[in-house]
Image (tube, rainbow, N blue to C red):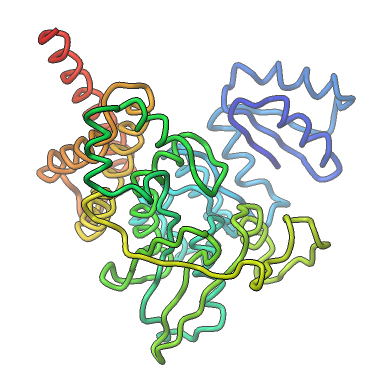
Length: 380
């Protein structure tokens, strides 16, 4: 079973390629179902695959009887409901959706335990930790070390970045949407520049591996070869190394507990330590990356605060890319939203509360941006 957002051509191509095993496909927009059916017919498939759309279609894909593993990659809290349905059907979850745990952790973790379901991470950092822990007995982990590329501004001092934000905000905007190591979408590239992505990964690591926030470190590693590491009780450190290629952690999340042998060259080339030569590491500058601390703060508060952080960041990130405010405004508006949420925060939320806070935080950020724009117009 396959689901997708709006890329109907690619979805149809994949459905045809795997037509012997694909029973159901779904697109994000219910009104596009007829168009998707037509695209299958154009490719020579007129029967044997059920075509659906919207939330009903996604849930059908997530609960398809013959599927043993469900890869959850829907952006935002829209991925929560199909993940919950898949867990209830006792499907193993290959997690590629941050919101599932960052916002939904208080609901998802009890469900995983209740239904005896394993969740395997599909992003590179948590996959690295998961792989490292395969050789560590229960109670043997002391600390999690999340590595980070440092994003677009890793080689720029905090004072210089602040100056650039004031004098040339459009240069900063363009720079923030270009990643030095990974080929990713615009949103995650900006999250990498602010290092909010690493802050969100700290929260995920807490939920996935039961690590206390005091036992989760972030280290900048510009080469992106060590994807993360685990410190054990005997002072050893176990790390996972590989080229920065997202296909590898996705493959492992699906194949676990096995490793699928691939011919040389399938994923670039094998890692060559001699060719690599050296690797470097440094601590992140908290003045330059305030979003990291915001994520730690939200995680320690817990409850609906982590979902508030995530939703506020998503909206702030989008508004920044659209020119609504400058780079420094991302962290400021996220912090303001978190402070506004404190009085209404739920420490042990249900799914309804989580979804309500997600929508509230998004509205709050948009209102802040609207008021800021009105002030500029009045001043002008």
